[in-house]
Length: 513
Image (cartoon, rainbow, N blue to C red; front, side, top):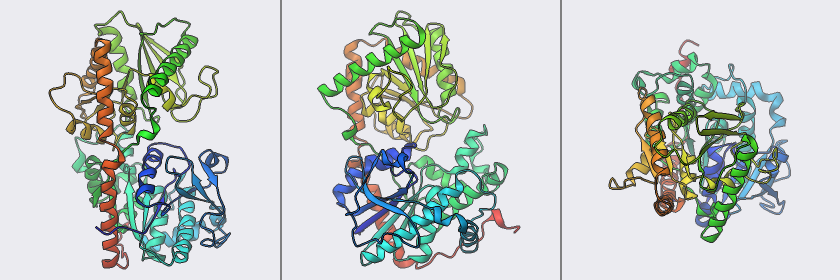
């Protein structure tokens, strides 16, 4: 198995805590550092103070390998402040603002990427990734052209991959999509993604849903890469249908226990988190909650249907009406950004909206200094009844923090968890509910009933279930999953010798141009 001497990895979420990809990279870094000490270099956008929360500059790193400025590019070298402390290069892209149209013309002429209909974050992502690729090119040459793999995550960094393919073809390239932009859009727009899956054409849906630029960039990067990867078999099937290329390797997302307090420290963290959550609930509602109150939660991005927020709320309503354990108070936390309604009462179940998922809260004195991970141990059970979830980090994070969880068969992690649990268990640390395009109300009922079932367990049974959650989480550590990345590195390095240059064909989307 051939392995690289250096790995360049680029993502919009390097030193930029946005969502699931940040979790992928930040938890994987320690394993990568152990395998390739200081030969892994992450490239991310320089967002100033926003990046500085996670970045410590050190001009001595890569000294003599990079000039102060490359073609007018401003960048900083340092270490990402996460377990493993990997090297990171943060790149600005201001110098390319006046060249944007020229770069889009290059992308069309060389790779048939359609950018004229672009809007929103497309522009800054493309300019950043192009600038980062110029830095990669100089570094590669300064290092005497070692055996190198460059991995690009999502459409946001696809311009970097296209640049490397043309101007530095000795570097083996990997393109990873964590969720196809058009698949997510189909699901978000209320269309039945699964019942009519084989009838969808990615190019046609991109036109219908105004996603032409992102979809065409993602599709061309997938076809241009020496190795194309995704995070689950669910998304691999989606890529084959909508991007018209099946991934060469599936690279599931792992987690690391360095993020989780252990033993007595976790017990103390759970006690503090529960106390904090109960105090905050009392402050919001004016009620008094005892220590045995059942605490339930959902978290993630504000994607009402895709993340199953709609199912969760309906399940809380069902739970209030049908639950067997009426003696225990229930508080459900919706840890989702930007929802407006702070409190929703559903009978004797109270739903509270917390304004954020990932950052530190500072708007309330009770929550000041607390993060999602510091509060998660205090939750009794989480539920993520997703409709569209290529992997699903939130349920994996839950069991890593010893919190039993509920997910669905439409989540990549749900499929993995179902295969790694025995059928003999009466209640599993990960409950996987079968979900389709047509069984919404059945999913609502099952979510509510599973939460009610958990509430009726004896304390010793709940403790045993929490231990089972940890045991399952340990099977999903990066030490078990990193082998897939090694396969991807080998595949890409072998391909770079056989395919000296990518010769694209015009996709159907542009056949009338």
